[in-house]
Image (cartoon, rainbow, N blue to C red; front, side, top):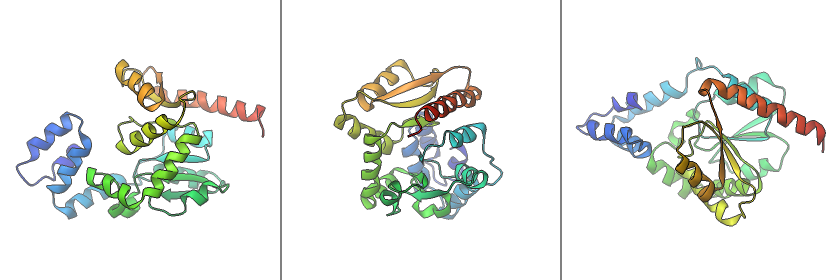
Length: 240
């Protein structure tokens, strides 16, 4: 975010810096986009998200081995899909939010990586700023209908997601109203990352139960590894 701030060519830099300090990231990104040279802005996105030097981590490996049939990511980079496509013989399909094939693919046997905010492959369709969120909702309502259906009929585990994304929160709120709330979704978060009040609000407003882990982010692969073992054990005892 700070590197993006250097692109601002007007006297708005201090004001935008304050938005970043207040964690009003969507508004800050919109302001940066509006107050910077478009070519420079696009070049920064390319240099940030289209870098092969970023290698998959143990977290990516654990998510891969858990082997969920549908993985939804808000990331623009291609680290996870490169990991999936390069290390397994299992067929994967990468589906961006603007694809008309998502509903049909969900009924197939293919494993799906759903790019909820687009990909660095098509910068013009990346959902990054506040106005881009609104455009995506306006022009691709079917995607949000499918996402809502998924959240209503499946248990979702959020990993590496701070649950501040307005798209995700809106879908969760709709689903929470429609469902009984007896079976929550889950968010894996570092202990202390969210306050007690935020955790309570996630449970009450969005039916999301926080699974907190201790010891810093370095412990996340171990926690996911434990989840992976339980998933494998469950599948072995429930082969159908």
